[in-house]
Structure formats: structure tokens, C-alpha cells
Image (cartoon, rainbow, N blue to C red):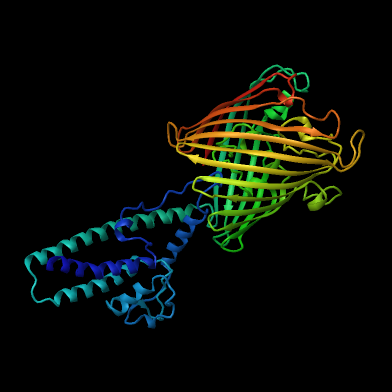
Length: 558
């Protein structure tokens, strides 16, 4: 019993000393755990945001570590925590600092009466502070007149074990200094993190042309690519300025098939020109609220979650444009605007966004409020673990010549219920849900739109209305054969006009969308996703023949 008590008594001051010294800058974890850590965490480049750490965490750690080179003066013993001007009872480590000073008499501070607990400490400072505590331990040991050989051996064993820990830590700190110096010398920017993504894909569409689609006679095999560079910058440590450059040349299949139902989720024809595709700034207002302001490329899904976690990404999710998200909510006019997120604890979040399609053009039917726009609100809730549901509403306006109610999905009637020349408003309602139960995640949505003509033109009268409907059910099986893999299935109905005050503008039949894909990670940075989707009765017209679209998307991230 006496032997166990002695070991506990001897170990306690050392443990207290180390645990209190570590918050000065070595790290907020026990020494034994530090010895098991890599010298520098791996800095990974992430192409999209989705549930990742803030981009400057590593850079902030490096900057804090670099402050250890500042001249701070000699250390002096502190007998009372009251002698320190920068330590208060509200500090999280106050009790530990107070115990070192007043109970163990081994706390060291600076000559100007400060402790500087928030800055990184040098190895010399750590050695001096540790030595002061070891001296106190030695004095306590010498206070015992009679120690048995077993007790002396126990003390020596503790000293040897502690010396090994210090030696391990010293080696890791040496390696950290070298790697940190190299990183600081070669880092792209102290405030900006760069990442990137490249997509490559062979693409083909099969099926005879229909009677009511205006596509070409044949679709030939093509090969497309998209390259993006992403720059995430932080000015305060809690904000994010996102800049994205893009070059894309992936064929829009609607130009040959005659229907936007066949569009891929990552297509684009921009003549191989590099463009500023996205520029936005996100910053916190309170602990529960944050704001977005975008100058270009801002879209609803950049602010508002689409509740389709496995298949929403155009680089690693669904292959089709329709399969990624509810188009009548998240594919309304975007470009420039602002939005917010407000959290009600861990149960619910409220989102709002206003965006204009041609905010940068100061002419009639353009600008922030006179041209195409969308205003969206969504309430997202997680009532139970692994279940997310959302209810969304948006109001959109399209000037004559720019009408696209269904977000370039669905039938021609769904895109332009009253022809393209008639200015149109739409009120859109969407219900989305996602539920994960190992090993499957099921998600889906239903969307309704009520479009209204704003002017009269030919057979169209101002006030005429049309109703659109779309739905989808998605099933994903992640990590099926390898960590990072994904087997996905999508079935749904792209936007369809189910009623219209204008005669002849309703869709006569129903088209179904079937999609299957399998994402396989070749390496941590390379994924291939072969897959296909099928469109029955294209444009919701049984006179049109079934269209098959096949591709094998390859994603590189860096």
C-alpha cells in the first residue's frame, strides 16, 4: 500500500506540471498522446466544401508555432498567480496554473509579470519550466528519511520512463521544426489554401431521334473535360473568401438529342476559355448565424443544403443534371446575391437567399431587382439521428426571352410554360428528405411549381397559370467494396406540366428517369465513375424514342 501511495505522490506533481505547461503552446493533450502524433498533420486539398475543417487550421497552427521565435525575456519563479497580470479566474487553465504556483512552487513567468499562456513556447522555456517542477519533486523525495530499495527502484524506473518520453518528444519537435520551416518557405500564401479538381469523361447517347425533339440525326462519341482551381482565403480565421476558376468543354447533349432531359451534371461549353466561375464571401454574424455575399456564380445549393448527401456532387455524385437536386428549388436564377444560415441548436436550421441572374448589367430588365431573380427560404431539421428533412419555398421571375422555370431539366413545356417571349413568375415548393440506415442511404424529393404569365402574347393572357411537378427517389450504398466507393441508383420524373390554362401546352405523357452508377476510388485522389441513365418518353411524349446516355467520369483532386 505504501509503495502505491509513494508512486502516486511522486507522479502527481510531474503530471500536473506537464499538463499545465502544455497549454502554453505544445498542445492540448497529454504527453503520452503527443508522442504518438505525426510531426505535422497531412495537409489535404479538398475540391468541394461539404463537411470539412476550416481551410486555415493548419496555417494558424504554423503561425502560432512561429511566434516561439520572438524574444520574450528570461523566466522567473512565480509564487502566486496573483502576480501574473494576464491570468484571470475565468481562464480555462486557471486552476492548473494556480496549483503550480502556490502548491508546487514551480511556475515560471516572465519578468514583466505576464504568463503568456496563449503563445507557443520554445524548447528552452519548456525545459526551464520542467526543471523547476523536477526540482520540487526531488525536494519532496529527499524529505523522506527512509526509502526501501523497492521504492528507490520504482523512482528510478519512473525517471527512466519519463526520460524516454522527453527524448521522443525532443525528436518529434526537431522534425516539426524542420518541416515547419520548409512549409513556411514554400507555402502558397499564409492566408489562402489552393485546391483543384479535373474531370475527364467519354460521353455517348444512344437511341433514335423522336418525332417532337429537334436534335441532330446522330450523337457521336465525344470526350470532355473540366478543370477547376479553388482558392479559399480567410482574413479573420472564421470567415472564407472563395474564388473558383474554371475551364470546361463537356458537350451539352440536348444539342444533339433535342431534350434537356439528357444533360449531364458537369456539362458546359465555354470554348476552352478560363473564367472566374465563382466569387463569394462567407462570414459569421453570431455563433448561430452566418452570411454569404456573392458577386458571381452564387447558387442556391452553395448556401442551402439540398438533402441529397451522396449524390449531389457533380464530381463524385450523380452523372445526370436532374439526379443531383430538386431543380424547381435549387436551379432557379443565380449569379450575384446574398444569403444566410441560422441554427436552432442541433435540431433545425433556417436558410434564406436572394439572387439575381444579371446583377452586373445596369440596364432595363437586368440589375439586382429588375431582371431575373430568385428568393428562397428553407427550414432543415434533423429530428432523429441520420434523418434530415427540409421544406423549401422559392419565388422566381424570368423576363421575356430568359424563361427557364425548370432549371434546364424536364420538358420544353416545363422550361417555358407560355413560350419564351412571355415574362413569367413561378412559386415553387419542395419537400426533401434523406435517411441513412447502414449500409444504405435513401433520399428523395418532390417539387411543385405554379407558373404565371405576366404579359399577354398571342394565345397567352396575363394571369394564365401552369402547374409543374417532379419527383425523385435515390438509393446509395457507400463503401461497398472499398472505402470511398459508392453504388447509386436514381429513379424519378423530371419536371412535367400537369395543367396549363393555355391550350396545347400540357405534357401529354410521362417520362421516367432511371440512373445507375458506381464510383470506385483508384487512389485517395483519383476516382472513376462508370454509369448510365435512361430517359423513357423524352419530353414527356410517347412519340419520342427512349434515350440512353453513358459515360465514365474520372475525377482527379489535388
